[in-house]
Amino acid sequence: MDATVTAVSSTAEHVFSKENRVGIRLLAGLGVEGDAHLGETVQHRSRVARDPSQPNLRQVHLIHSELHDELRDAGFTVSAGDMGENITTRGVDLLGLPTGARLRLGDSAVVEVTGLRNPCVQLNGFQSGLMSAVLGRDENGGLIRKAGVMGVVLTGGTVRPGDPIRVELPPLPHRGLEPV
Image 1 (cartoon, rainbow, N blue to C red):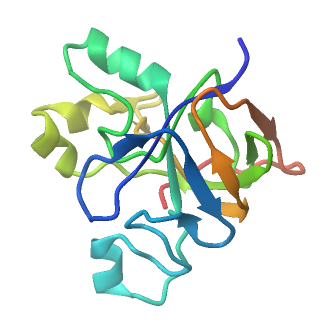
Image 2 (tube, one colour):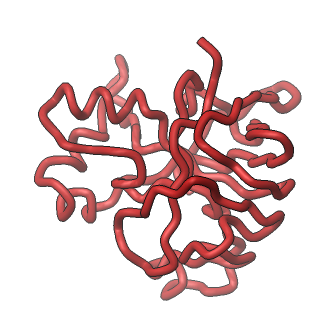
């Protein structure tokens, strides 16, 4: 299956879910135009409270639509944008990417993956039990965070549903994703 963008979402306010759009414009070094998390420095309120000068490694939030399928099978009602993601994908193992992987989205946009989204308790405010549903354990008992990945915009451009996604891996050795 080809990797594609299935939905794009943004919201100017600091709210949990984001509105689906016909397209979003990514701005190099900043994030999604008009989105509450746009900026060179951190925009997530809890991180701003700790240190507002930190670089914004969370300019773009991506979730694989396969997670939505899994959650629906488990009885949750979840659609694109509901968990705060800007870009919903299909056909890309986002969680299996190494740090520094680049996602070429559509004609020109490039997002570099910086790390995993660390699920927060706000998920339970959206739907009871959702936070534990996006956490799992590997064969060694290690925590698996399934709530998507975060990235920074290297090259701007417009991204729309149906756009192709091409993955470029960084040079070896690869580093696994950690929460950012």
